[in-house]
Image 1: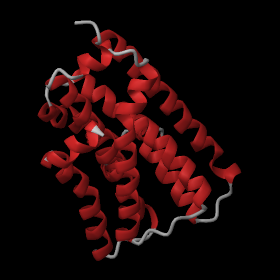
Image 2 (image 1 turned 120 degrees about the vertical axis):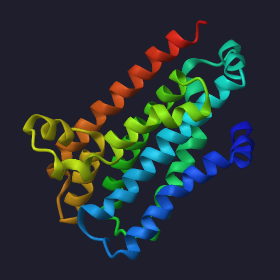
Image 3 (image 1 turned 135 degrees about the vertical axis):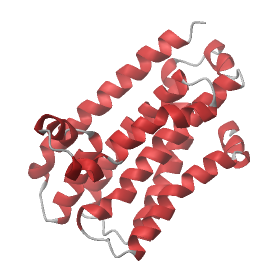
Image 4 (image 1 turned 180 degrees about the horizontal axis):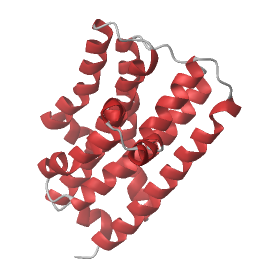
Length: 223
């Protein structure tokens, strides 16, 4: 409830949430609603609504010294993470649905699509929590988060400019690339067996991000 009230008063977060929706509407107007271009708004929604909003909310707790109260409360680490991530997750899902609607993206195989989005959501919210923990202020999350936006949100756009095969291989294993591959594959009629490898890679990314978040949280909680 506290996060919801803070969200309504925070123009920075509201403006940030609108960016994927504007991009989705622009992409639809440009007539780029087919193929891999149609997945960009969903990936952008995950990066901006998932990672950036979560980072801003965690950093705000630190900036106002209210995170200290959470740490001193009887709540466990899992309860704190779930409580601080709930609103970000809901808002991200809302923005994803809005992006799908505005970009005219035809959702292939809803169940497998939902599973891939869930794994991506876990990863990006964990990344957002990490950004919030290492940032001192809400505005600092924007600066620190720019590499995250470029690497995990826009790397597909830069692939055509990269000639190094090693770098291209690394890009192919990034979460956003795995999501793009899954969604395009499903759109082309791929079955579960055809995307199981991509799902497993996403699962590994999600697990690594959660473990990293817990480690950083435990180090940062002692001042």
